[in-house]
Length: 301
Ligand code: HMG
Ligand code: MG
Image 1 (cartoon, rainbow, N blue to C red):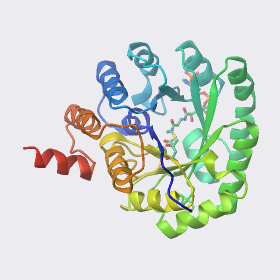
Image 2 (cartoon, rainbow, N blue to C red):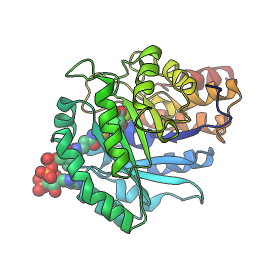
Image 3 (cartoon, rainbow, N blue to C red):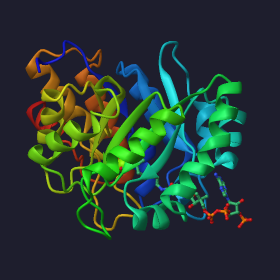
């Protein structure tokens, strides 16, 4: 397939990234991060999640974060919601787009949201009704699409099944999550070939964690398969609290650099993105997880 002229970057750092940090991060730093990401030109930012604070304490302040950010017209500020309680809280916070999340692995579903795959899909039904009433768009995630920390290999047909169900229920887009970053370019292409038979490719997104250093290769493999939406995390922040050892998402800076090299438009300013990533890395006292950001910052010293 020819490469697309434009791709959409979905910035998940404030949610997928920060949810996994050990030390508390105050609301003001989260707000500053989201505002800086907005100023870099990103059109889609996942700001936080409305999940149980007992399960994921880092996301406890998401209502306050939504109240504090400066919303730029044309930018989507989304939240992750696992159930009606989460959706109600998101609505109260003025959120106009939410994401539901299911898994392609039964064991991961149990550990992450305390129910089976079928139960999770049932749980989403009333959420779609409420979302529709409030004019809220719903995105869907499928976790463990290229492997599970508890079950190992996951059949592509199982990923296709969960994706198809979420799409039929009303998710306008399905983000395929390589939660533990074990996928390779070949496996990614085979997966997209199979899932792409059930869900149109322009309704699929790639969500690659970089645990094995394959995420950027998987993004490129996905481009070759006609995928034009990629989730990424500034400074490569993050991991998954229910996938031991999983590292952050592919960094947004690295994906942007790849796209620039291919002449693919994103609308994002690399310099501003690098500075947002370095600032939050400094706040967290951790090394910047983006190779591109580290190289640019080292060269500018
Ligand atoms: P549960 O314990 O089965 O839920 O957890 P419950 O309905 O029995 O409620 C238990 C308690 O939680 C109650 O409080 C509820 O009020 C409260 P208590 O009476 O004990 O004081 N509760 C809530 N509080 C706030 N917000 C809510 C909420 N719901 C219930 N929405 C539940 C089920 C789904 C709530 C829990 O398992 C949970 O919150 N899980 C979230 C896990 C999570 O956030 N994981 C990380 C995000 S997914 C991810 O990172 C993967 C992704 O990036 C893609 C990829 O990489 O693969 C998306
Ligand atoms: Mg993730």
